[in-house]
Image 1 (cartoon, rainbow, N blue to C red):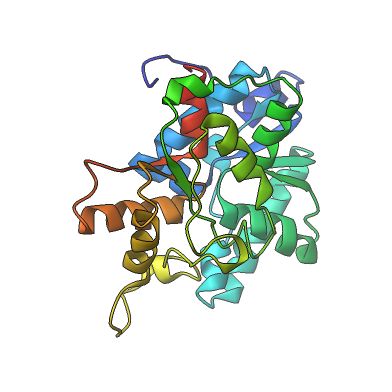
Image 2 (cartoon, helix red, strand yellow):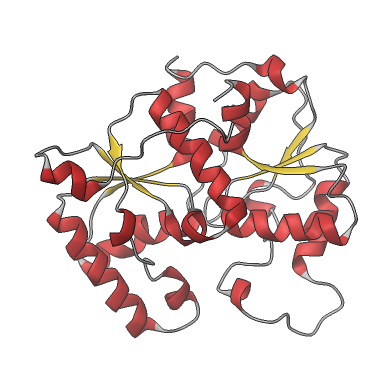
Length: 264
């Protein structure tokens, strides 16, 4: 899946040719810098190309959107970063944004409008599910051999934006062996990285949150933990390593599972 090269259009290059894509694909910090999550970006980019979607990335012009700064309490830095991006979006007349990170999705959808940045913001699971249901994206459930899959709800998709149905609809089409964790949907436990916790040392306590959540997943006996957030992927992967289960159980993003099922 990693050997096939595809051309990723860059917004500035398209505008120089007088072209304007329908969507800005927001890669995000994790997608740009985290080696593990780069694989998720590649998988979703291959799906976009497979669907012949009109999209582009900002490339070198993409900066952090300020979400971590705001969560950590640095409101001035957040507003500086947000206003800088809003100006870039204005220059390229951005109307629609596709995100793969729930934190980016939430800040663009719910917080940028306060600063004048109003866009149609689409999470990639919404986009994928829509294309599957409309028949544009045909997935082969047999490619996963009916493997057991559980799903961890990211806080900023679930409780913050009530995106519960789309990931489950996709996973149930990928396998006939989807199993829920005891704590799921609005009762799901955080992976432990939210609210800028990703960037600080653990506080005193009996057990770290990511270990507790990993144990929730292990109780399902699923062979794959499906995630939809770079923070969640990092924490649950660490949890599997902590439990010495990384050889038995895989942590894969839903985009990776789809790309695998259609051999992209």
